[in-house]
Length: 143
Image 1: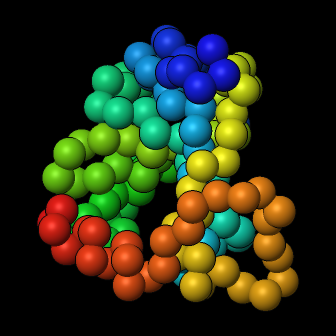
Image 2 (image 1 turned 45 degrees about the vertical axis):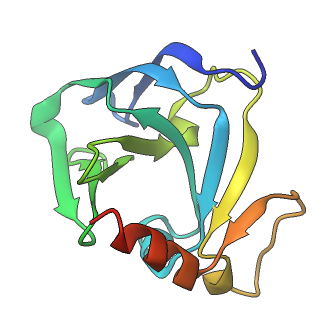
Image 3 (image 1 turned 90 degrees about the horizontal axis):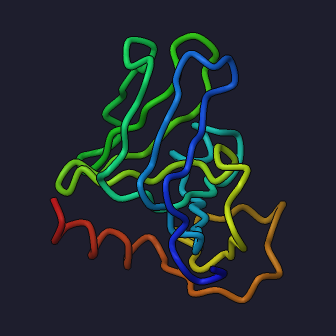
């Protein structure tokens, strides 16, 4: 199943107030180096694509924040765990890979905002990379 979608994945926040069920998680994860992601989590955002078929238990503990014109971020209001980055246009979720402890053969496939990556870290993984200009061009067609 190394390049296939992981089915019916379960996750939860640090305190357990929010439980998540995702019908399909793509193990090909991305890393975002943008300023917003780094401010949100203190480092790059390692995200798996989860599509739209996502359900939450403990919805009352989820706080949503419109972090850009094209996306909303969600976190647990009890423990602060980062839960998702949701695209406004498609309602598709990207979630921190660390929420899913049982993914089969995850692999880094793309790095976003590679030109914003600070000099104090880098990854040896050979991946595709997109710059700020490339990302902005892409999202301007999506907004």
